[in-house]
Length: 77
Image (tube, rainbow, N blue to C red):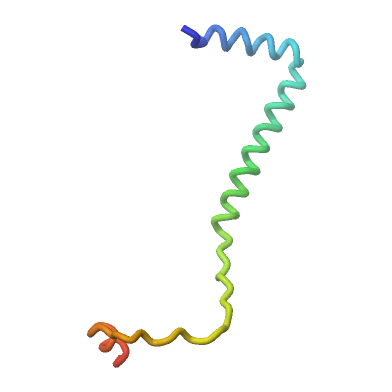
């Protein structure tokens, strides 16, 4: 109830092609495909471009008042 079957979608597609015309419908689908390709390309470019975060030069943080044994051995290296 309320769902569309395959036959409903086929009838809708035929009516859409008749109203819009074959060439216009084809151009519309081509534009959608180009948009999807550009979106995917943009997503890939965003993943590839990883710049180093900029650092603000400033004073060094104060040493902690309490050092663990692991910190002391690491500092001795």
